[in-house]
Each structure stands twice: as structure tokens, then as C-alpha cells.
Image 1 (cartoon, helix red, strand yellow):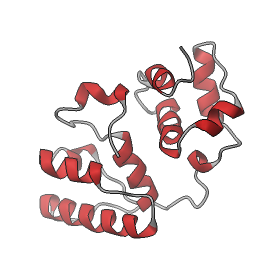
Image 2 (image 1 turned 45 degrees about the vertical axis):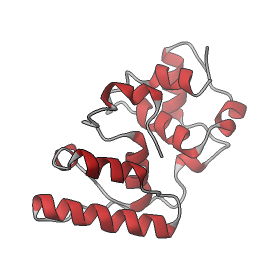
Image 3 (image 1 turned 120 degrees about the horizontal axis):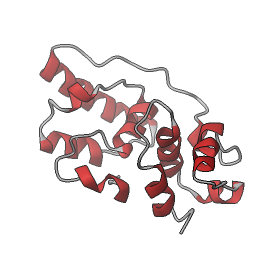
Length: 150
């Protein structure tokens, strides 16, 4: 997995947790704080970005590697998250209300056909970027990058 174009501003330093890593965190059930992330070396961040996270075996490897890193850096494991057995980003038919609400702020409406064409990681990113608790300045750039608007 790699970075989205809208994440380019921090691509060199990886000072923020990229969407691809956040996706794996949610899939593998780990709560990683930015303070933990910032203790990792650039190489360690790159490894976390590069590790696959789609299969259960991928999640096991990612989980073990990340927990080892967090323990080495902080002396304690990262908290676990409940893994949603039916996450919204895997649902190709229902666009989450938060995503539609955020799109409507820009006088846009996403169609089911557009939503279906997105990859799960892209849907994940739009869901995260549409949450009120997230700094969502990248929502519109993400829509452009995913070719949902011109």
C-alpha cells in the first residue's frame, strides 16, 4: 500500500499516520496514538506502510510487528480495538450518511455507482475524512483524486 496524493504534504517525513496504515490498524484491531507513531523511525514507518493488511495472516504479521515496535518504544503494548465484522468501507451498496453529509457541504452528492467503483481503502479514506472529529481538509482533494469530481 502506498500514500494517496492528498497525503503528499507529509510523504517525506510521514509525520502523520497515513490512511493505508490507519486502514490496517482498523482491520487488525489496534489503537495507535500519534505519539506512538512519532516515536518510530522513518524506516519503521515505511515498513508499517508497506506491510500488507488484507488477509488474516497479514493482520497477524502487522499486529505482531506493530506491537513489538510499540512495546520497544513505550514499554507497553498498544490498546486493542474491536474489529468490526461488517465495516462500512466494505459495503458497496450503502454510502455512509457522514460521507454524504460531507459531500453535500460542497454541494455534491455521491451515487451508489460511484461508491461501488471505489476500492475499499478509498471508501475507508472518505469515511475517515468525513468524520467531524477528523481534520477533513483533504475530503475534497480525495474526491478529486478518486475521480468522483472534476
